[in-house]
Image 1: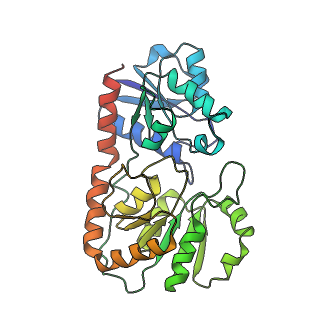
Image 2 (image 1 turned 90 degrees about the horizontal axis):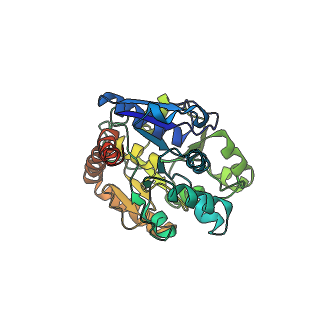
Image 3 (image 1 turned 60 degrees about the vertical axis):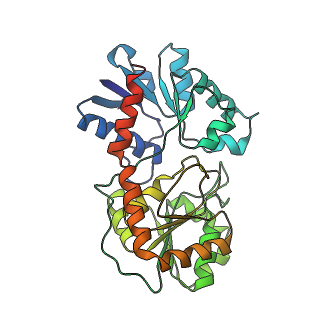
Length: 316
């Protein structure tokens, strides 16, 4: 099967060197599709000749609309959390709805997104995956003072000071238990901390910026528990959540009720529920780590790609 993923055109390489969630997803699908014996590549929308490919897979709404206007059939995969933030009267929502309506089928990374688009018949739930060859656990004894890790691109829309990823809650959990915490992410997170200077007073806070992809595993292995009290998240589970789990870190996070994630403690933005989760994980350490391994194996990019090919076969 000849497959083309539409390059988002954001100026980031595929695969990305540092940050770039959509670019990472495209690369993992492309790589695994080629391993399976298909001919998969990525191209800018303007250079796509539909006669060259059996499937065109688009990941950005405005480019899906461009394909639609050119009369090119496509599968759409929505990654944009902004659709909820800006509301149904916004250009973002209407553009995504047009992309959905013009698609052969649309892959949604969260069931709440399907509901938000009024259970549109072209929408199905399709989760992210994880590279279990590059993210794997190491042997760890139960920590007495676990090191906490957050890894996220904070902010919402144009507001880089908005705490969408819950940095204040992660720090609060660390402060409540006098634990070390690392908050990592792209350098634009500095805008957030410049507006929340009080956080820098905590002596056990470490800030890390622009960790290269080939150093992420080391970052995970240097910590014990992953914290992700996010809101308005498109992916359920989020990419960093499953990478952390594959690397052996139990997770305290918020995600939608309909997705069952073994190895995670579900805690909406409630510092006391997060604290209960922390103590529960430490009390059942080996079991949580084993559940993390089993969950990440099920969500391997190899398995997700195999499921995606089954979808492609219905529309090629």
